[in-house]
Length: 209
Image 1: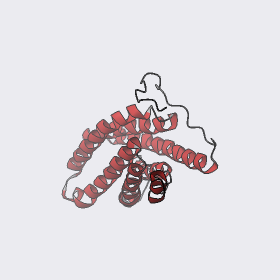
Image 2: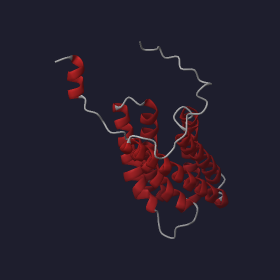
Image 3: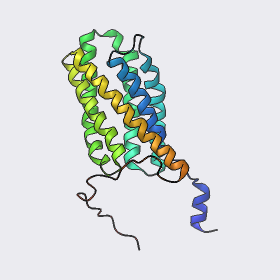
Image 4: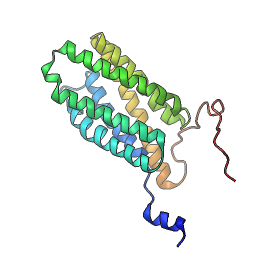
């Protein structure tokens, strides 16, 4: 048995976890943003999903992408899975011991840190496709507006951030649905667009003969 055959048996093909990771981001972002937009009259329904779906499931998607050797999605899903887990744990464990102004300040700094991280993920998302670029672009806008709203304790700004978060969720749902449908049917059913700026960043990898 050749080495290639041995590797194919010991390393089975893994399904693409990108649609799952994007769906986890979309659902959790939608619930979180509906709360920020003032649309809900309940408590913090987003919190459980931040821990379970946006957190744990997205983190698992990131780990599976490490198996697929996809450094972009491994970094994105693992980091945002950690974001939702960290934010959820903060609300559960620490927020009760703070006053509203302190909590807003804490969340503002958390959002600032992830806005910085998402800024360079936004840059490299230009090399994936336009649907993914839309996700990271709207996510960046959401993080920036929410961090401003929290640091300035402005309810109106936080509501605007909630509206942008809903738009982010819609973009993520579309990218997830496109990845799922196109993968299942083996052809383009939902268009995701070509990568942008692909000619401005040359591919310096050695060509295989």
